[in-house]
Image (tube, rainbow, N blue to C red):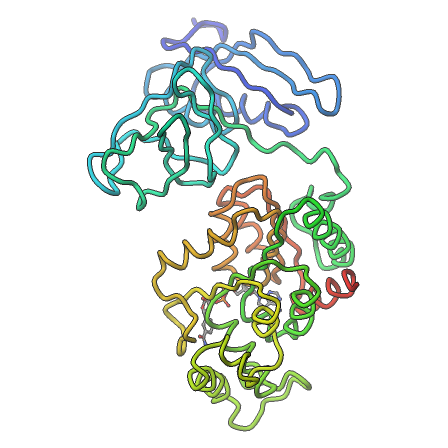
Length: 410
Ligand SMILES: NC(=O)c1ccc[n+]([C@@H]2O[C@H](COP(=O)([O-])OP(=O)(O)OC[C@H]3O[C@@H](n4cnc5c(N)ncnc54)[C@H](O)[C@@H]3O)[C@@H](O)[C@H]2O)c1
């Protein structure tokens, strides 16, 4: 009869370093080994003795066969646990555009290094679901569609180090986030802490990016969001055609999808109003021109144009119009979003499942996301895609924005 200490056929020694205990990474590592039918033997463990000192783990793994060991190592890599004997990362050339070698390494959103020419180099442009291309001694995340013939792509899982984000040490700033999703009752706390995060982000020279859906306008959130833009707290707005249409409809006609923003009543023939708004923008030649000509005098996009805050409106299958600025080529829309997310320190996702999840996929794990939605499942979905840095505030987005603009009022 075999004892639990008997070694299985295939062995490997792995190491991990970081805040392994209080970030619960250690238990995830052990669970993964068991889940893949393997065994572990801890050879060395030293616990970090201070707030900032990392812990260090070295353990011998056994698995029943090569295939299970390979799958286990891929899983452990995402937890920051990599083989000790790592030489350089293996590279293989792309044979043609957009065609990666079969066993390409697929990235997480965590800080990643690869070993090239005997040196560990930081992977630039970190995001999930990308490949790592090594060139000229550097390494960079590249989306599959951006891969070009001859690119040298990291394959396998050796010579790769991943550092998962550890739990916040400054527990004050992101405290409401430690429990993942905060409920309606805690909304004032969430607003206060979001305001503190906005200030902190700006002090550190990073951008605050707002991702917003049309429900921001429907719930009366347009005036407070416009104020936040005017007061300099927003550095880019990422949205879709609908936000633009309803924001402009509200500014020109005082309705949002035909409902009067002043008293919440249905305006007679109001259902045409969003088309009238689009028509007005077509007449002006575009949103910027509508602002410059004095046709558009208030609203979210008006403040963006006036303050020089970039906005991106991504198209979708259900769009009316669309507005001239709406980017209908989805690859270009993704690129435009990604460009605005460079140097973001905080992203506020406000009432848009589609755009919040899209943005979550583009961000590295050290950029914080506050996801405000009436439906707790949306925040969970953003986290499920691997963006563990997201927390949800379950409340009405109009109310949230009103409180946030008051909390940040100069
Ligand atoms: N007329 C148009 O052109 C038009 C109209 C609607 C949508 N669209 C497009 O369709 C796409 C998806 O639209 P979307 O982002 O609105 O849809 P979505 O379903 O992705 O997101 C809407 C989100 O708002 C949340 N929500 C609803 N009421 C709320 C409230 N009071 N407070 C907080 N959150 C609330 C929902 O739970 C949901 O998660 C976009 O590209 C949009 O531009 C176009």
